[in-house]
Amino acid sequence: MGSLGKRNSLKSTVNTGFHISIGCTGVYRFGFNGQEKDDEVSGVGNTMSAEFWEYDTRLGRRWNQDPIVKPNESPYLCFGGNPIFHNDPDGDDYGITTKKDKDGKITNIKVSAKIYIQGDGASTDRAKELTKAAQETYKTKTVDGVEVSFDIQYVYDPKKKAEDLNSKLGENLLTFNKKEEQSDASSRSHVNGYMYPGRPQEYTGNTGTVYSSGKTNYTILHESLHLTGLSDRYTGSGANKGYEKDIMGAWGQMTLKTSHYRNIIEYTQNQHKLLTPTYPNLKYIYSNQTLDLKYEGGKSKLKR
Image (cartoon, rainbow, N blue to C red; front, side):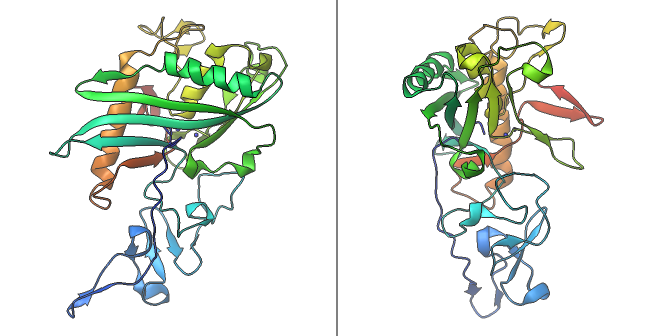
């Protein structure tokens, strides 16, 4: 939360940003990136007003800084620097692919991610082992009539840099460190996340560190699920109730409790309700939110 893996199937969308007039009675309200035009600012079609920001269509840049900080991008950048090839309906780090039936009901959800590995203990063979382990651990399950599956691919690339990751392509990076895993925060495997300033919403990053040279499949698969938006299900006193045998709740466990699948389904359905009016043919959802937290009185509470 940094998607269910925009990691990824990629749906590239040609977005020309052309100004379109409809008939002779008025001007079409929408344009560049499907957002509403604000023609009073700098002329017809030159400024678009999105939900949380405005940007100049001539530059493809925001007017204000993006509150979600990405060290590899300018805070004014939009669309990964390529507005012709990408659109940006949501703001993004991982992705979900969906299928619907003839009545528009979601029937299938696929969580996808590409996770580069590097550092001590990383190799092409290790990437293959992890991809196989992910296939065996992240099992396909049908919950409440919706089939949820995962497509998590590991790739060894010793030269990949954090600033080169393209979140819109669902790219992530885990660095293996030879320092032994410890229980204290300074030497514990982790994913780099962040808070949205001014709003009680947590986000996942797309980088992380795995200690003990990445020898343990459990640790890597646990951290990978953080990259796709799932939260820990334990506290300092142990696993949350009901999560004693869950990969997010107890060390060494390699199963996913049904509640994780329900969280994925709920998040996806809510995003479709929000985005489908603007994107009626929506199949891909791009987001970096932590998807299984809700907030009551400003305090986070895990969804069961």
